[in-house]
Image (cartoon, rainbow, N blue to C red; front, side, top):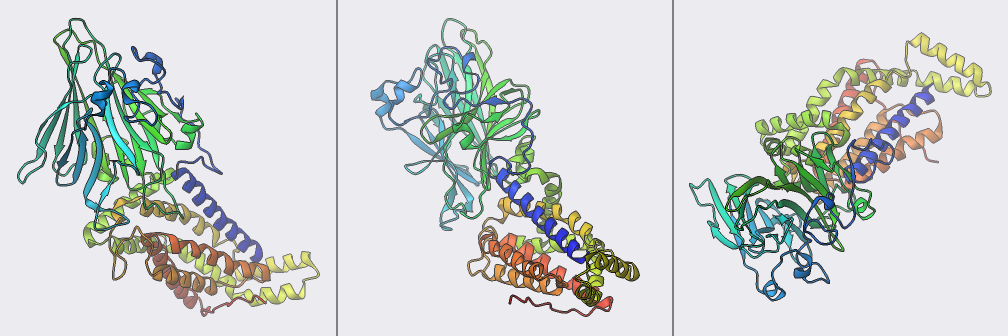
Length: 572
């Protein structure tokens, strides 16, 4: 029974690793390997090169409902966009302006009022701490922009040159600044795009005023899209990875991630139309999203627009506009870090871009508690330590039962070993004798399993909290740990964690079976090697848990009269 109990514990350990791997795959935007979830009830197949809802868009030649990205390889921009300026005008230098606030600096292109670069004042670059982190960018190495415009005729698009006016820098005592882009009259329609930036906010209000300057009614449609390349963000770990790509949220379909590879294979699934929600581009720690108010009908699309460029967006109809009249559509463009409280305040479900996977119900309260501890302690590293301490206190009695069961098993270990050796040629009698010893000593060989099973989801949830929280990024702890989101530069934490893992293994009773005894040592050692590549915050959490477990196990063994004994491996 002792062997059976250890086998079950290893099965539980292996199952927890399987769940971690499975959710790691899902977090990266891949299909779940072992536990695939059901598809959303309302889904649509991405068409690879055409946006969903194409047939409903009047006046656009070919299959591209939304104007493709500017400067697409091998094709003149004027040929791609309905109503674009002549090729000579398109070749003219484009005016770009930089808008500066207290938290974000953005570059806006006068061609269409497109946001082509965003730089965060309070977040450093991962590879060069002296530089600010850049999310959106249009350069030779990266392409990630936010565009909007009109379709349904030869109307202004993100390719239309516009006049720029307004303030460019948020000054002391100023709470907001406004930048306006005004298109020329095209097809009897003028588009005025107004960005409003507010102090302390990563969300920009983007108002689209559509003016009918012609003599007949018009019914254009407004598109809002995010376009980026399919590459992983610079500095992303090659050992562990997080999801990068488009996402669509609706109240009925909930949060739907779309992997770039699914777009390539025409297998992307998402809710095609809704009257609520948002579209987003997500990567580790940061995201961008277009938001429309609830009740506004929109068609969601995800598509490939070039060799390595992908778009996610919305198309919403503008009500019929009489000659001389205008219509206004208010939207918001979020472009910033995945700070949970900020996201929750902006729009329902936006906090889901910080993806905890299937353990969100446990992860959210854990993050809430971690945030409260940080508000009290002022250091994220010590907050992690304090959170693990609180979890160990919460699970104290469960752990006590597990360790007490292990202590009893350790106490009767010599009797079991002697009996197994004596009756090794009579397996049936061996089992009967073993059951008699368990009854006499009142030992339940399965007593340590349930407490461990109960705690596994909690610690997996905490793993995702620490991996996903942008607050860990560039957050120092003590001495040499200057960034809890990066691996320990000197590998001190993972080395100490490995030693504590081996010590914890040595304190456990050795299995009678030599092969199991070897596995008891090799499995934790192999598992510990992964932590040399994990962020320091994750290693700190696991190390703290190991130390507290060793202390608790030592105390319980001593109280039960079972002196702590180190069972060293025998590999000969």
